[in-house]
Image (cartoon, rainbow, N blue to C red; front, side, top):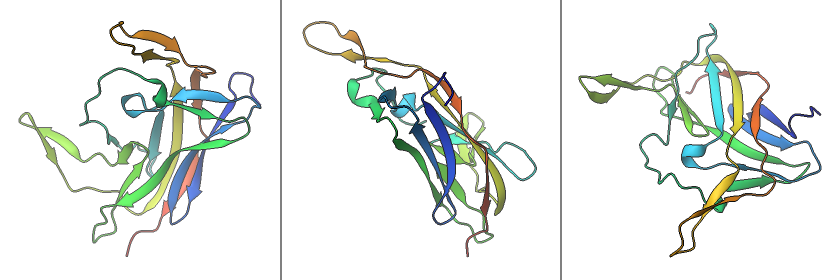
Length: 179
């Protein structure tokens, strides 16, 4: 086990041509991290068969956030166990076999574009075939705001928060298409 991190980030196949991303705590100690909305710690990278990165969108981009963090936004992974951070969902199947992949808070491909100051959508979708998937997990926040009116909010450190960045394994993912 590397001394820098107690975690291993694992991308693996899931049932029905799916994908799963797990964070495995390799240590005997419980570790926590912030995992909520605008502070989502996982970034997925998807490459097509030619090695080109597929542009992704974020399912939270149209939501508003207060910016405050509370203790319920932290997740604790018990020593020796795993937490599933993302499972894929395949949607928007087109007649020619194209589809949309949602994994965590990201979706592929991002089909939004700007035209004359307005957001437009195009029907795109991923073509059936082989893709390469890799994930990055980044934990950067270890405290939250505690509110006790009429007192102003105070910053409190959450116990046993692991801070750092780790990369997953790289997985070849095949999708044969949808009929």
